[in-house]
Amino acid sequence: MGRKNDITEDVEIAAEVAARIVEAKGRLAARMHELGLTREGGWRVVEELRNTPTGHKFVFRPIHLQEETHIEESVPLGSDGRPAGL
Image (cartoon, helix red, strand yellow):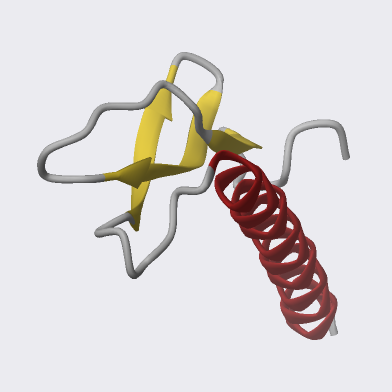
């Protein structure tokens, strides 16, 4: 019986992480649009999973082979895999 609850909790955590990733990508897409960083102009989004002292975080940032920018969005996760703040 405990395993079913664990699976349900895992599914809920995964859904929350996925929702936050979608939100972060949406925010980044909006910022890129505002700055004119288009796919046609050679811009792409890099996705990284970074380890941090408190867990992990997904990081999404624009990249261009010939241009440089310092904007990014991230989704921090605790060491238990839950999105930070849950």
